[in-house]
Structures are given as C-alpha cells and as structure tokens.
Image 1: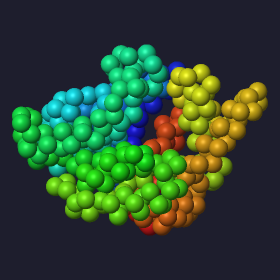
Image 2: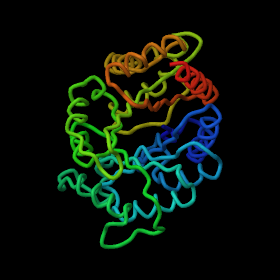
Image 3: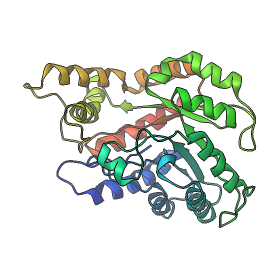
Length: 315
C-alpha cells in the first residue's frame, strides 16, 4: 500500500508519479495487490483522489489488483464512490478492490473544507450498506456503468470490525488492533455471510523493511518514524526527509517516539522478517499481509519491496 509520500527537495507531482512507478515494479516482483490512499491537504502525502490515481496505475500495469486503502466514506456520497469504482472495474475488469474507511480530515481546517466535523453523527455503517446496494444494482437508482461489483474491504478499528462482521465484509487491520487477537476472534465469530463474502477474511497491515542487515533495515524505517514524531509536535504531517539516524539535538520525547515507531516495524534481514511475519500470521490467523512501507530513498525502497516479495514467496 503506497500513500504517495512526498519527499523533501521534490515536488508533489514526484510523489504521485513515484506511486505509479512503484505499482509497476510491485507487479514485476509478483505482488497480488497494489493499493493507494486518500489524505486531504497533508504536506507529506500527495494523494487525495484514489480513483484518479488508480486509473493512471491501471494504464501502466496488466495483472496486479488495484485498490483503495482506502476511500474515506465520510468525505463522499456513496453513489459517487460506486460510480467511480464501477468505472474502474469497467476499465480494468476483475482487478479492482474498494477499501473504505471512516477517518476524517487531519486538522479542523481540512474537516471544514470537506464539510465534515467531528461531532456529526456516525453514518459509516449506513454509508457502506448504501454503497453496497449501488454496486450490487439493488438500490433505487443504478450506478453506471452497471457492472460486476468490486469487492469491498473495511479498514477497521474496533468499531470497524463490528461493522464488517455485521455486513459480511473482509477487514484490514493494523497498529494496536494486531495485538488484540480477541477482537479478531469476535469478528470471525460474529461474521454474517454476504453477497460479497461467504466467510470472514482478515488482512493485516505492517510496515515491513528488508535489507542485508538488521541495522540497514531499521535505518530505512527512520524517515517515516521521524515524520510521525514531528507531526505530533507540530500538528502537521511533513514530507519524508533524507535521514537515517536521529539528530543529536532531537528532544527526548521525539527520540522516544521515533525509537518506539522503529521498534514496532517489521525490519531486518530476509530471514528475520520471514520469522516475524510467520509469528504475526500465527497470532492473527491472517489470510493476507499488506505492507504499507515508506522511506526516503526510492531505490532502497524498491530493493526492500523486492526482498519482501521473495521472503513471502518462501513462507
């Protein structure tokens, strides 16, 4: 999953074209899916329009499935989302995934620009259900082009897991939810079969960095960890910087946040990462693993992606 991360010293367009190029090499490396994100008015992320970006990627690839990780439904009318992803499915048959989430804008000005405030009613479950009916052709109006519905995935927190179980949809989980096997067990136990999925399906999201040594892999994780730590200080998520270790004058709280973030990543040699992924799958009983890795150096990112594909092929 690529978020079209911007990089210090490069314009935003490079972040977007870099996503397209990464999809091309992901297909060459043997990945099954390539997903893109939706973030609005964030300096560190260039992609606010997943459907447009996926259309461009589809024109450069032949086989790999393309999806959103995800479309944030509070920002959109379900009919418009159905039309966008039906169009993508018509252009690239059998290759489109529709991942949906419920996150709002990153800051109050962005939320105001999106006409969405935090205190508005939570309509996430109703929005997914409405979207599902448009895609299936069972709503009062028909989304065009009328075509076989792409699969829907729910980017899930605790609440999202419950929604996905009730609607019979697969889930994508990451972060703290990965440690809570009980929540995943509840999702599987309470899952109701649907037109989209007869059985529960779990994808787990991790930041996976693979290199010749553990030290090299962990250095790849520093730019993203540094950006996350800075965002907590400034309230603004910044572009990636060319940094492999922390500045000596980094405040203790920032240093602690970076070290914690790097430690939470799956980072190491191919053998180490393989063992970590095996433990993760054993713990979560995951059906798929999705890597959401970002780093400053795109050549090293490509090398890490290619090594990760080799690791997974041997599991």
